[in-house]
Length: 452
Image (tube, rainbow, N blue to C red; front, side, top):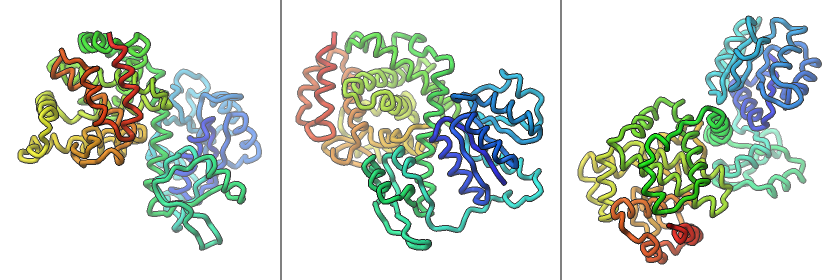
């Protein structure tokens, strides 16, 4: 079977090619970055069995490419893989061999479509899609560079059956690493088969979360903050956030909620946000999102993508708590007494909620990477006296550190609205004096200095 993949996003092509090659190793795959390139490949390979194609692309879009294909091949199966609604385009109407898969797509949707179409072909050999019996899977250097943080060991192929390890897991793959291998005429490294699912999940989160984010931003925004501005009025009067920060935070909150709507697990969040009984919990989530936006803008840490991750974390970190448990958490945080949590079932639920919430998002492909880490660590402390893992400063991720410091301020303000937050935070300089907290501390001080 021969398949042509057409998409102007190289990451999407890489992901599709990896998924299909692993599930259906006997399929021959061709790729193109736009409709015109796809047409050139199509004209040279008129015996194609199936085309997967995006719609919005430069040079020639998916609709025009489809029309060109139909001039000579009326029965060739054509799958539009796009968030574009095909009902808006007349060329797709009443075509028995046209199919549509919405973006972001799932593995199952792609595999089922291939099986459905292949079942009509003379040879049913690929229906079960048995994977290749190989111990190492090749990964292009560009994929590794885009992934950056590689949680799997990497190997170099020396001969047909010999591989040597060139890096351990949990490394950052940089441009200089790619250039070093290119000089040796190496364009791919290898991941062991038993680690590849984890590697693929990491890559899927990058590609599919971006698709979901782009789609959410193109949808009509949920005007969440204007539904009840009393949630943030007091906080804005305290912190003095600019209209620009408020607007940017609101857009990100709305985009995240649009994405969460696609996952039934998170249906409860929408009810939490709308229920006025959850005033403290809801205001905490929204105010935290705004504060994180402000601090990351000041830090200039690849701000848009980082704020996206932190907004997900802000809205989901207390997702498994109700208003009563949230109130108990505030009391216990102020008392600094976490050992008593393990005595009762509700206490255990409170103690473990960072782990439970992190596990919910860990394998959800539409959630960006690192969100699970932020959620898992959001109650840790630089002195190792936090929970549930009792991590010390050097084991806490930088984004988690920002989150922890912002939550500290918000809790203080909720418990005691008359507190002088600038004085309070100045007194925490020694507590936050270790990295990664030390680098963040001055930017939060800067924000507090600009308070009204």
